[in-house]
Amino acid sequence: MDSNKSLWFFEEVDLINLFCPQKIVEMEHHLKHKTYKKGEFIYFIDEPSDYMYIIKEGRVKVGAYSEDGKEIVKVILSSGQIFGELALAGEDRHNDFAQALDENTTICPMTIKAMKMRMAEDQDLSLSILKLVGNRMRKLERRIEALVFKDARTRIIDFIRELAEERGQKVGFETMVKNHLKHQDIAALTGTSRQTVTTILNDLKEKNLINFDRRKILIRDMEKLK
Image (tube, rainbow, N blue to C red; front, side, top):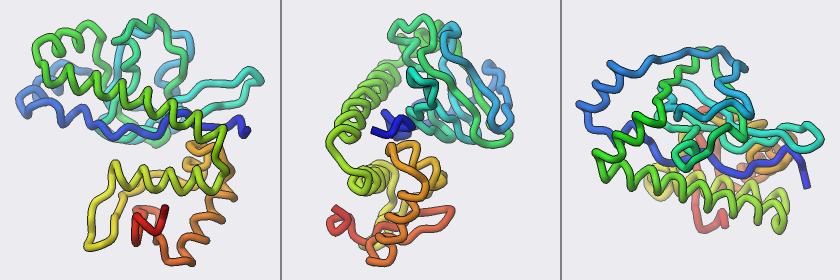
């Protein structure tokens, strides 16, 4: 099994959209934004889990290290998404790291105490956060099963299909996904290599099952892609 493997896909829940406009304005008032350079760490393994984080701009990679010191990519998140949420479930110290993937990645940290207060005031928000954590746990189980039982081609195709199902927009009979991932990112998230990802995507393109560029992936027919 490839050690540079993923346990999660990026999350489909957009936390910012869970707040009404007034609360977003309040958050802008009270949260201090911090900007990170590409490659800069937001937190390290074993640091205290005192905050959860909302991505205002840019992308963040959450990962860990295997016993032999190789990086394991867990998830790649983008604008509007959150990380560090396990602190809500009692995690005292981070068991992973978070790293900025883009220049000028802007993060809004929120204390766990403040988030718990908001959840107590807003039942819909509380249920959405619970749904988010549950979704990530289910994806964790699916990724482990895929790494054990599925070959590289199947994992990459499943990744594209799940991406389309969660974040795709219908364009006629086709499905378009705005893509912020490089081939190396997809490789890290599927436990494969960049070369394998490129080869399989090009093969799918030649068979007219998908089309892609740096900004989007277009799935011609979801059923045929299966």
